[in-house]
Image 1 (tube, helix red, strand yellow):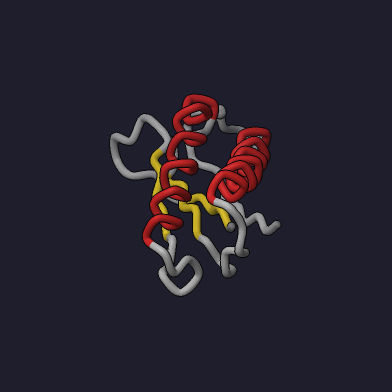
Image 2 (spheres, one colour):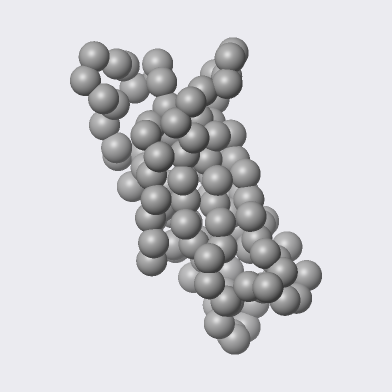
Length: 110
């Protein structure tokens, strides 16, 4: 998965927002796509208040390996938690407070 943040903030935006791109070509079954979306949304809910106000997009960039749904959910949650933790640790640029402006685009790969 790849996580990125928009470099500009929407007017009046006071909190972090999430966008998901889970392509059918990478996760052919609807059950798999929906499970990934639920896991990512739940991880985001837990850490959204620790993130700077910005639009964050999580994109699936590789084919999902063949495994049980339970194992896939655990793997996805661990990876997404790592991405959001890394984004949350990113310091604000000099001269800005952590809540003034969104982070520069952040791209993380597994």
